Image 1 (cartoon, one colour):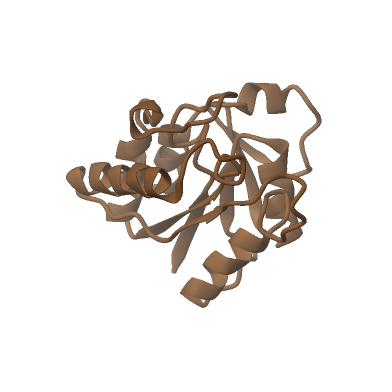
Image 2 (cartoon, rainbow, N blue to C red; image 1 turned 90 degrees about the vertical axis):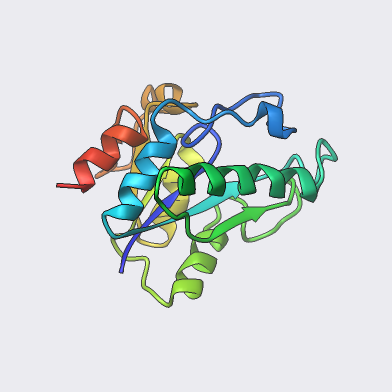
Length: 176
């Protein structure tokens, strides 16, 4: 199985320091939906692992989050692709869970769902927390320059981190 795991905010859709709280605020980044569809059609299973502390903070409810993910799936399907498992951490930063990135719980959940090892699987994010989660389970850390990516790139990156302009550039690299 060719598995690719993506962070959501800042990788697939625009991010906001004020949180993405409604379906109207969930706006895909240019080329991201098409990239996921292209990867899917090329035999990749694309899964998503996303921190959603706005749930714990009361900024939005599970129905709003599910509506965003339904829209994401619909847009990918309209491009002829299919999106795999989407997992989210609903906890706040002080809740002590094992799923909130940089903890690797969501990545382990995806691995268990598909019955695969995470060794070498690319985990694509835009933050240091994403990269650290990848390292914790022997995933290949991949940084995109969208979202918080440029800010993250200004810091020292973990050795071996791959860097791409955006999800479209990454897809072009993986699909030969």
